[in-house]
Structures are given as structure tokens and as C-alpha cells.
Amino acid sequence: MTTETLFFSISGEFITTHARERMRDFDWSNALRFLITSLDGMTHEIAVEILKGEKRLTGVNDLDLCDETETVRSEWQKIVHKMFGAVTMWNDYYWQPYAVVDNFGMHDLSSYRLLTNLQKSSNVLAIPSPSTPVTTTTANCSAKFPT
Image (tube, rainbow, N blue to C red; front, side):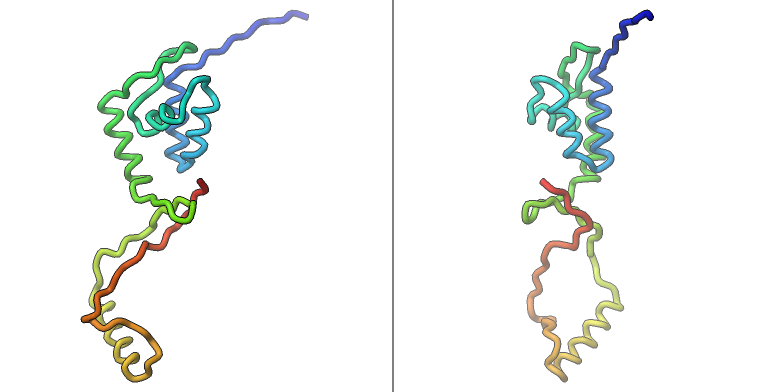
């Protein structure tokens, strides 16, 4: 029986791309964990810089940390902002809105008037009058991500 010795190499480009693909899959916590646990000496701060598109790994087997090119940085940051720009933390969970109300239509106004008239006649509903200032709260959210 003969034995053969096999070798493998790992490139910084592969590691950077793999981590960012996890981000694109909305799996940022695994992307961060992958970078920190896979490479000796990788700090949380450096991993975040890579995931934000500010830095990249280069080289084969002997990896270097370099600034990301301006073109890639700009494109990647547009993607990250679109995916995570509205994410907020509330009660130890990350929440991402799935809809934004930016205007009310005529149907909303007629429904409001109907409900206001019902409130005046029955005192069942507590709908503010048009002169009462209305405050808004956080929008409904579609997903929560554990911290």
C-alpha cells in the first residue's frame, strides 16, 4: 500500500468572499464567528471591518490584511446598507422592518371618519380626534435575530 501526502492552500480572497456570502444570506453572526474562530489572531474589530467591506484578506496560506478597493467597498456597503440599514435592537433582539407607511390614502381618511363617528355615538373606540397630536411607534418587524 502506498501513501501519498496531500497539501491544500487557503486564500485570503476565499475567506473574505465566504464570510461576505454568509452576510448576504442574512447570517451575519455565523460570518463573524467564522472569521474569528477560523484564523488565529483575528479580533472582533478586524472581522467587523472585513464584513463591512473596509478591509480584505489577501495572500495564500500567509494572509495579509489590506484595505478593500474603493469600487468593491462602495458596492458592498450599498448591499449591506440595503440589507441591514434599518435593523434595530430592542429587548436583546435585532429587528428588521418589513414595511414602511409613508402616506395615507383617501380610503384611510374615510375609514378614520367612520370610526370617529362611531366613537362619538358609542364611546367604544378610543381614536384620537384630528386636533390631537398622534405619536408613532416602531413599525412591525418581520424577523428577530438573537444577539
